Amino acid sequence: MRVPMKVDYGVRALVELAPHHGGIPIRTAEIAAHQNIPEPYLDHLLSILNKFGFIKSRRGPQGGHSLAKPPSEITLKMVVNSLESQAASLDCLDEPSECTLSSACAQREIWRSVEEAFQSVLNSTTISDLADRQQEMISRSAMANSMGSP
Image: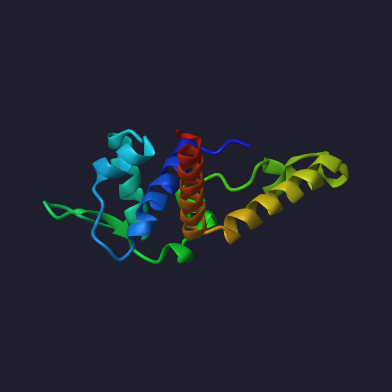
């Protein structure tokens, strides 16, 4: 499965903003540096995320970006559906009549199951979940590195 770069970067930007929810806005340059996202492309994505109501953006010296709602209320499905227009993996899942084999196609049922599982994971995973996992991984990595030091 391929995750489009737009979705990857958009989710990473939201995860970067999650720990700061309710605090001071974070500047684009800071998000770009921490998440290794080209700043011009990030500007474009942040504009889209703002349009869909995921973030609030403020210009000026005290400006930056912040989540517009709690990270626990933003699911990956919401983000993916906003950033990526293609919903189904195969055309025959949306339009079975377009394929002469669809009524007796074993693959179609497998791909439907894969698509349903994929959508279920996206719907049940929030930006908060990812931010928590990321923080756990950072903590474990720091602990492992400190144990390996003389």
